[in-house]
Image 1 (cartoon, rainbow, N blue to C red):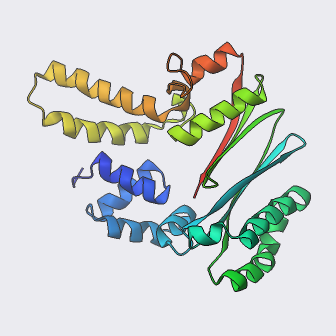
Image 2: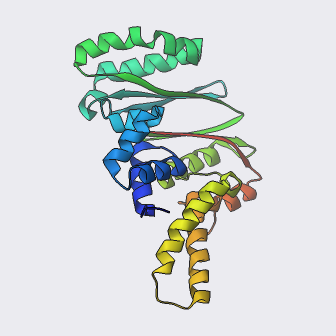
Length: 259
């Protein structure tokens, strides 16, 4: 690398924006490690998530899940302050938007959301904007919402709703970036390897020891970021993969949204 872009800098930028590891790494390199410039670069590329997270105009809000008829709708509504996110009109608006998605679909809701939102803007005096909407269908669905700020839906093949909800709760807490190691691209592996190579190169140890340390750091990093490899938060003796195998279940789809 031409500049010193550390894993901690990449993580900080990713936590702020929700953008992928590679996009954050590229933005930081272009900005020569300057966080503010990197944010500006991401905004310039018109990434929806970067604009939403880094713009800070509507940085707060609420998430909601509506479930019925083997379908879960995950919807987010953004505002400027936590105070407004607890406002009765704001909460009712979010519920009404979810009902509209259920009855008329995502695209129709997006088209007509402004008309529903504007009266509440007038009442609260804050900017309010619709966040992401997901519709997840499945025979076995598990939903989990934490403090109205983080919501996760998990769809399973086999297993049961309790298992799906437990995994959704786990995802809420552990924030995996990948479901399985198969999702980790070669570019991401290369970037993480370069970062850890720099860290290990500065350690005064024999080369064979440093090689083992490098492998250990890389393996640990991806294990912590991959859902199936993570230790289940309700049972430290098994991984999520083992939990699924025990129940002869398989993850079909995962949706997570965080305010």
